[in-house]
Image 1 (cartoon, rainbow, N blue to C red):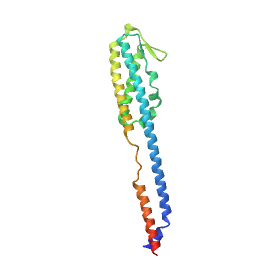
Image 2: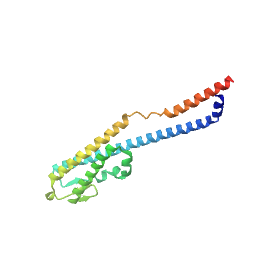
Image 3: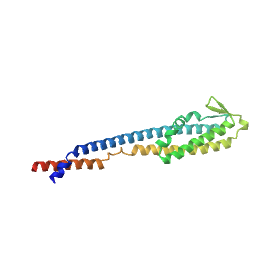
Amino acid sequence: MPDALHWMGPFIPVLLMLSIVAMNHVVTGQRAEKKTADESLRFCTALATELRAVLELYQTNLRLLEQKADYLLSTRTSIVIYKGNLGRLTALLDAPAIEPVVKAFAVNERVEAVVAARSNLKCNLTYQFPIAETKFDEWKEMYEQASQSVAAACRTLEDCIGMSTTFPPSQPRHGTIGQTLKLIHDFGERRLAVVRST
């Protein structure tokens, strides 16, 4: 038995190095997870804010349609974050949040296309159109349906934001590293006991 322990002695530094490498890997992984979670939270917050701004414009347009005004506000300048981060959308949002967000922005594009087809865009901010040729009831219904899609996407994103802020920070994974360190410590103690007894 002492010979076996003596034979394993040279492997102790190797085991220590492996445990250090494993711990480094775990710590790096935890940092990357935290960074991704923080980035996802910021992205969800920004998208929710952008969608709320679009919803406010929809409410303004609904009031303008009620008044039978000759112009509507465009939402094109309000969707900068979404259009600028399409590649990050699938990486930073959870699967249940992607569908309502993409649907809300697709509905917005459809609304903009319908209004743009029957009006003139002024300074990329408003649509101006002749009152006599405008289908106010049809457009009002379209904006109401679009408002529902945008509100649903806002609720989904706000749920994601709420879940992100209520979860505790990830706990360190002690399993295999702790076991490895304990084995190394126990082996060293046994080796020391054998040396003392001889």
